[in-house]
Length: 67
Figure 1 (cartoon, rainbow, N blue to C red):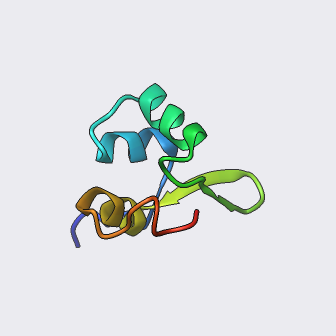
Figure 2 (figure 1 turned 45 degrees about the vertical axis):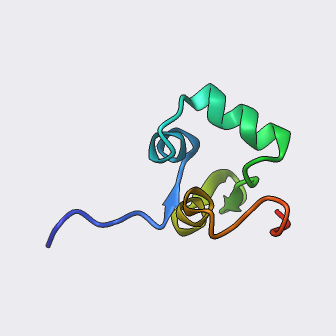
């Protein structure tokens, strides 16, 4: 078996997937330009990788999709 593809990403990984620094990623989340994370187990913040891919491809646009 190969390396599993993540379905959820922590902030640092999500920033890397979008080719930006962690601070840039957090600033965009805080500004509402990127979605807030989902909370897993009441304490872990994670971003769905498929949602990040849809944002990057333009499939999901901020003005059309409500976070």
